[in-house]
Image 1 (cartoon, rainbow over the protein chains, first blue to last red):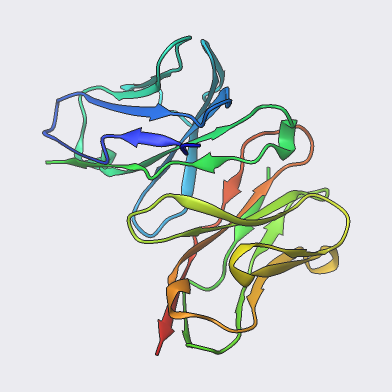
Image 2: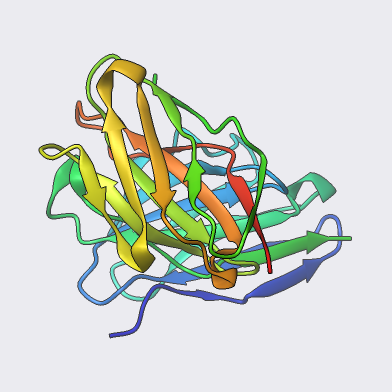
Length: 116
Length: 114
């Protein structure tokens, strides 16, 4: 049973380019979460999605960032016109969505974005 | 809103010594509590979790944690540390009132000396 998969593992972009980060949840999981981790900091929540639906995007910057989780295919976190401050590790987690607040989240290995 | 404090940024122990990593939380009711471990360049792995019941919970890799309501703490312990335990450890809190979103502490980096 494969775990949460993220690709690419490392992504380098120049300022102004777009970054697309992909997340495939564990089999049977219908809930996806995106987090950002800056150096020497904990994870900060960005967005929580179910299939074709954004449940909570309270942690997403208002501009340049968007996320989707289509009916088919992986969840995508998209960052437009990247700036150096976007350099961070972006983690995806998934959960089965069957236990409410006690749903355990399983994390992927992360995508490390570097903006030159 | 809930918050999590991990007061120790770095902890250094010798291999074979005991370990205790501190975690304090702020929340009006009993939260759901988690400890995760992150090895360099990797994602987070769940070590253990507390929802209710017995306040001493056992996790993987020989770790345990004790929930102490009076101290708002959920400290992680291991009786004998192995060199492979060197990693970053994160405590996380989920509000039990219906939120799905964990709040993470900033992490404690564990260094193990041979």
